[in-house]
Amino acid sequence: MFKKILIANRGEIALRIIQACRELGVETVAVHSTADRDSLHVTYAHEDVCIGPPPSSSSYLNIGSVIAAAEITGAEAVHPGYGFLAENAHFAEVLADCKIAWIGPKPETIRAMGDKANARRVAMDAGVPVLPGSRQPIGDAAEAAALADEVGYPVILKAAAGGGGRGMRIVRDPAEIAGQFATASEEAAKAFGDGSMYLEKYLAEPRHVEFQIFGDRHGTIVHLGERDCSIQRRHQKLVEESPSTALDAELRQRMGAAAVRLAEAVSYENAGTIEFLLDRDGSFYFMEMNTRIQVEHPVTEMVMGVDLVKEQIRVAAGEPLSFGGGMAPRGHAIECRINAEDPERFMPSPGRLTTLHLPGGPGIRVDTHTYQEYVIPPYYDSMVAKLIAHGRDRGEAIARLRRALDFFIVEGVKTTIPLYKQILVDPAFCRGEVSTRFMEEFRARQAGEEDAGE
Image (tube, rainbow, N blue to C red; front, side, top):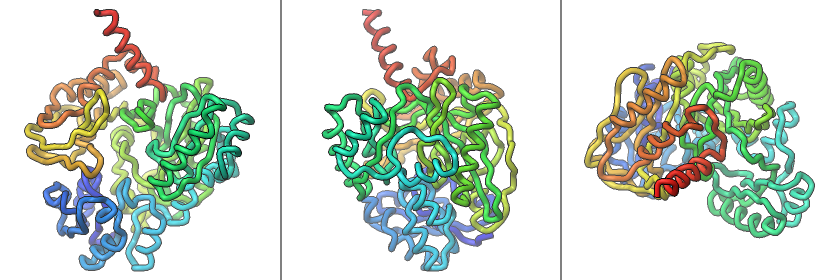
């Protein structure tokens, strides 16, 4: 086991990794920008190193500064969390050159699966269903138009090297393809330094269902069930739950087997997620692979009774997986991402938390790096906390989440708490009838109720 780990991240995930390290008896090094000097991950780490000014490009994305911090503190390994450098194959390779362990999959795996077009080819070769579309990045708008005519509208354009909804456009009409291709490619080039695009058939009302997979250096690869992440806005996840109400035992087995088969095709090590689109008829299609721990990993931890972050560290140290395949979920878990945002416009609302009261009670977990008087900086994501509820069944999990939201008090900034209170009493949500279009339909229902009341 490692003696000291540097955490190349910030916020709640950095604190979450520190918690896992404390249980393993491992010392930690926190890196931080000048804007995060008063963050809790800095407070609770054994050592801390300032690596630059607030902009991410000058601090958390500065590979040289992060590695220098690891070297001067004697850290044996680096945990990247999610975001920032978590899926940067070059960073993992430089760490290896410096004899510093990487807590994540092999660099060649990150590179192979990080390119969405290449990941599609790997999936097809492994016999995993993919949506009709391009096997290679598309050269120009004319090629995109020809392929769209072949697979049929609507189609979706995606950045080959991207994620998080950037460089992504839905095209419903041939007249829009050229303009949308140019816009998406330009956005991708600015966000990821690569304007390459690929195209695939767009499903109108699918579910977004992802499988947590885990592999070790001894050839064992398993999955730990699914998470339903269908409730999104602009391709950003809002609510995640496990297990999915859309899967029966037979479909879960087929999707899980496909996820493991794909992970085996790239000899996967450590934690990862295989994301699928699930159509109404039970057909499912590979969408992408995230070669890191996910924001929503707590829902899997709650229903499976495992600590995924501790397992990441153990596996990176060469230990075999502490669990096998075929694990069954215990109860139901749901997560809400509480952000400092205007819930109507989804605009960031940075500022000081003048009042903060975190909920508790049976079945409630709160992952947060914030505290009363903490200032949400404007430079990074606006997350205040992740609120997770676990119950014996979905109904109890929903009831506990509603109760926790009522007891979750934040003043000084606007948050998305009011939005989640509305979602959790929405009839369609309560019936488990969700899709990636849920938010559009939810807003339409709200507007209709307001019109009826006037």
